[in-house]
Amino acid sequence: MIKKIIKDSRYEVVMIVMAVLYVLLIISEMLALVSSQSLLYHVCDTLLWGIFVFDYSSNLYYAENKGEYVRKNILDLIAILPFVQLAAFFRIGRIARFTKLFGVLKFTRLIAISSKLWDILRKLMNTSGLYKILVLNFAAVMVASGVLTIVEKHTFLNALWWSIVTMTTVGYGDIVPHTTIAKVIAIVLMLIGILTFGMVTAIITRFFVDSERDAKIDELSLKIAEQHLVLQRLEAKIDDLLGDKQG
Image 1 (tube, one colour):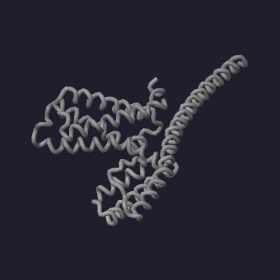
Image 2 (tube, rainbow, N blue to C red; image 1 turned 90 degrees about the horizontal axis):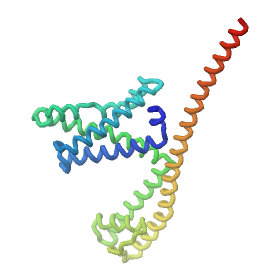
Image 3 (tube, rainbow, N blue to C red; image 1 turned 60 degrees about the vertical axis):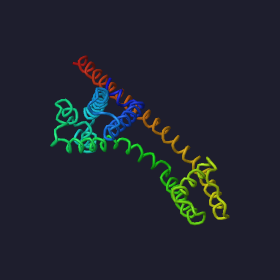
């Protein structure tokens, strides 16, 4: 039952959502937006921590090579170390000598949980060369902002704002180019935006479709392997029965 759950195509999506929530919770506490002493924080922290303990333990249990799994998922192991929960339970987080260590461990857990998101982001960036398109957009925006700063005498931040608004074809109209060079740059930015943002949407769609397809293929492969084991057992029983009859 548990193996079917963690191999389900929707399971990874759920874990990504949980990772995002956990990152937001930790950041909120570090920025003092939420009190670490509040009941709501402890409930959410413990619940999310328990979900990641279940995720790591289940995958480790069903891993073919457990040592290799531990080595490849060391950050996931760090993320579920229970020091923060123990410190909260025994209320040692308030003691002066534990304050710095407590903060470091929270930051470490933040990095560890974020690794799940970075893995997905890295896969997304490598899909159909998405990172190349984003680099092109970034370079175009930065060059256009620099030229506009010189030609139109705007501050760099205002020029950056104008470049992004122009490339995305939003066009607020709060900053309007007056020189010929700036207008040419605006045309180039708009063309780049129109051409590349459509590609970005298509690539992201393909990423999720491919992920869903791969998950279904893995699920089918698992079922085929299970059926193969069943057939082997049936063949062994048939051989035993035939042997008994011959004997």
